[in-house]
Every structure is written in structure tokens, then in C-alpha cells.
Length: 123
Image (cartoon, rainbow, N blue to C red; front, side, top):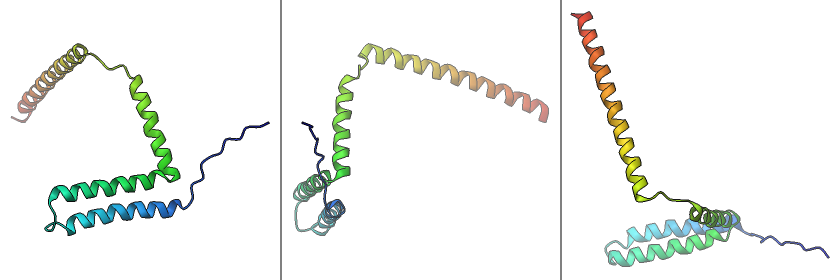
């Protein structure tokens, strides 16, 4: 007995993308059209709801589902990262600042020296 994995079939992807884009554009147009009729908070809530609906429609496409899977995998990978401690961040920052200051002093000194030599040649 062979087990066959069924892939989800995505139909009408182009139409779904068109609907998603139309929702976002329509939400933006409605936001500006109803500028004087409704309060800002109501318009913002409406636009957020329309964008959420557009995202739902977009996720139901093949590329949208792949993007959603990528976001989930990224979240799993972020949990695996070993973040530096506060002390490590502070020490690294101080080292970078010190190196930048030393490099700035060296460049300033070279610039001054080259400028002095150029003034000797010109004068």
C-alpha cells in the first residue's frame, strides 16, 4: 500500500491576487475619500480590517502559502539564535567606538601631514 501525499491545489490564484490588490487599493481610496465624514480611528480600524482580509486572500494562493511557510520557518530559526548578554553588547560597543576613534585620529593626522607637505610644495 503506497501512501500518497496530496498537495493542496490552488485555483484561481491570479483572481485571488487581483482581489487582494483591489482590497488594499480600495481601502486606501476609502481612507482618503471618507476623510471628513468619519473619525481617524474608525478609518484606521477599517483599513486594518481590509488589509487583514486582503492578507487572508493572499495567503490562500500558492505564493502566499509559501511566504507564510517561510515566515513560520524564520520564526523557528530566530528561536535558535543565541543572543549576546548585555555585558557582551556593552563591551563590543566600547571596542568599536575605541577603534573608530583611533582610526579617526590616524586619518586626521595623515590629512594634516599631507596638507602641511602640500603647503610646503605650493608655497
